[in-house]
Length: 68
Image (cartoon, rainbow, N blue to C red; front, side):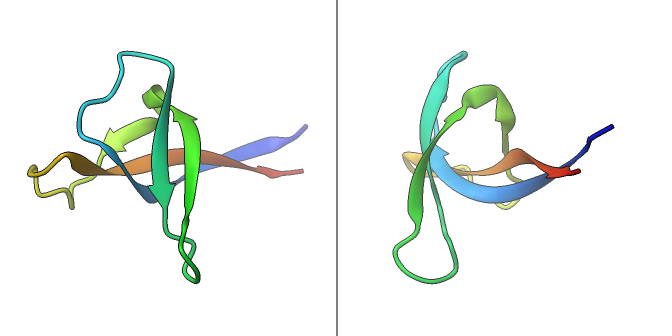
């Protein structure tokens, strides 16, 4: 059986999220300009590091890695 281990990575997205469906976020890849991703809004949780100001917010994106 394949096991999935959830983890979270920090991303930047719009402060106001859609109720459901996709949302465009930005992730820092560590080198280079980063990357935009389209993710489902239900996989985002407002980060405790977010300041609460501005049009964008810091989110924790829940991702799953397959350890097969």
